[in-house]
Length: 118
Image (cartoon, rainbow, N blue to C red; front, side, top):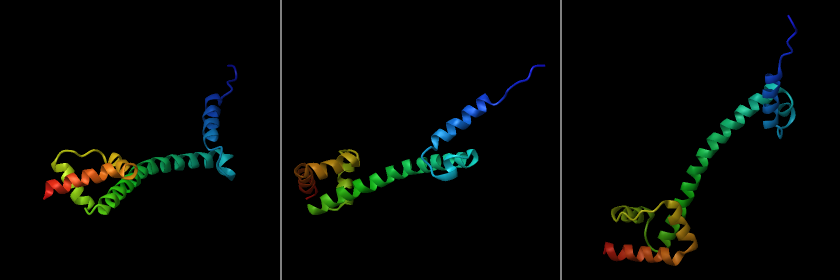
């Protein structure tokens, strides 16, 4: 039988993993086993932090809406309850943008809320 030279696909896979961790320090970018562990760790962290980023932004939006509504004399809780009852609820991201960028419009929404609640 003729001799079979192996390793083409394995070499390609290893090169791909080493290219993924190219910016790492020390053995994490040079040795395959350490690089493979570093890649798995990086992907786990990226997944976790994508979910955490959504959570953090929601907290930020709620804080901004709460600050703007309290500046006009209402709590966040009562304001959101009013929007739910009236079925006017847009997402919190949009409400936060209105509260920060167009404060007059947000004040008008709160005035409408105060007129209806009285």
